[in-house]
Image (cartoon, rainbow, N blue to C red; front, top):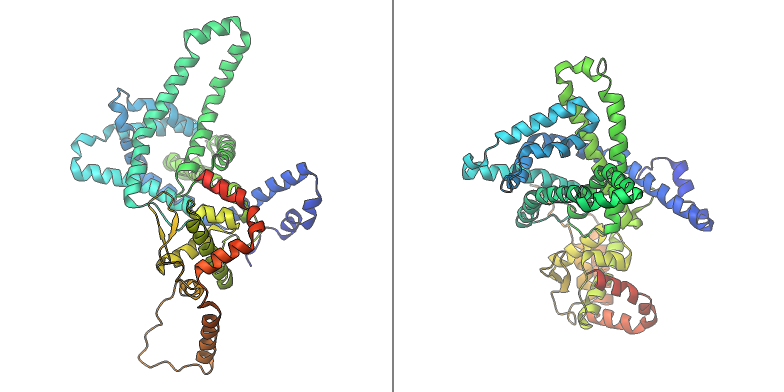
Amino acid sequence: MDKTLNKFVADYLWSDKVVHYSPWRQKLIDVLRLGYVVLDDLTKGELTLRAMSLVYTTLLSLVPMMAVSFSVLKAFGMHNKQLEPIMLQFLAPMGAQGVEITDKIIGFIDNVKIGVLGTFGVALLFYTAISLIQKIEATFNYIWRLDQHRSIGRRFADYGSVMLIGPLLVFSAIGLSASVLGGGFVQTISTHLPFVQHLIAFATEAGPYLMIIAAFTFFYMFIPNTRVTFRAGAVAGVVSGVLFQSLGWGFGSVVVSASGSGTYAIYSGFAILILFMMWMYISWLILLVGSSVAFYVQHPEYIAPTRRSGDLSIHQCETLALQVMAIIAQRHYQARKPFSASDFVYRLRVQIQGVTRVLRALKQAGLVTENHEDPPRYLPNAPLERTSLKTVIDAVRSDGTVPMIALRVPRKPVQGVAEVTAAIDAALDAALASTTVRDMALGSEQADTAAQQGVVSVDKKADTDS
């Protein structure tokens, strides 16, 4: 069993007495549980390690990515100097050093002349820029327990569109909000209605914070290779925005302000670079913590003090495989829309790793296939009336099988084992070989009509979300 952060706190938060608490107290316990599991994941070190990796990749990819992103702005008459407000907002905790770093980065971007790089240079520039987002996606997919990543074509299409169109939309939104708030109509109303002037002042002050929260929310909904609900993305965006502002204030007050000692006294002329790397590390860690919050908000079944890896036993995988095949068969014969992996998670209330593992085993065995939707949905790939349940069980049991190590000396068999395994296979074959997936699916549908009426709402929700 995984070691928990604090056994006393875990026993209190996951006590059986919680069900008898008042509703507001149960909500508070839910929030504390969420904070506990996020902090527990953070202390295990994987998130901090990946944040360090992203800092290194950022140092290599920051200038190429921004050069590619904002090259399209030049076609609309914008200059790289207009990046300053956004860069200064991000580097505000570094004070005067943030202004210096912003000037240097913009100077580097100005020196990148895409027109004289040639085909190979432009391709290398795009690859360097996309590699950063690719590593971010890999980290987010790890947090979301996802095995499948975007294909190469989808990466270039999705990431390229964001890098080229995203800055244009950001600057358009900034310009539109500035023109609306500074327009004559608004100014006229504010002179007659004093509270409108207060609203304008509040909107001006809250604008940077709302943009940060919106940017975090967009990252949490776009980067993972799965469908992220707006609720999960928005909650994580608010948490990350608050952390970003709070830790930014602390970093600027405690670390950067100590100009006569501390970092400056140790690193001297390299202090700016060290401080920049430290703030990037904190920023990436905030982003990853927010992604973890989004995952737990969307998948509350993982909020447990231990064993959040989602690993299933062989027996659980066999049972899950039968359930998955029964659902696929039922929806196939009812001519209903097939399920995606997320739909199976919501329908069966199981971890996403178990579902993806079982679907991968069934796909490798040729029992199911994916359609061309995104995310893919799963259809039967073999005649269900001729596919025995023994075939389904064998597909899961043989998943991940690797050949034995080749030795020069023949292996000496262990006495009695071969007979036992043969007896197990014979018993399974006798019990399941004559029953097909169709028999199981239609038989369970007729026998459990009343039970299925209770999950109609779940199926309709899955169809609506699809």
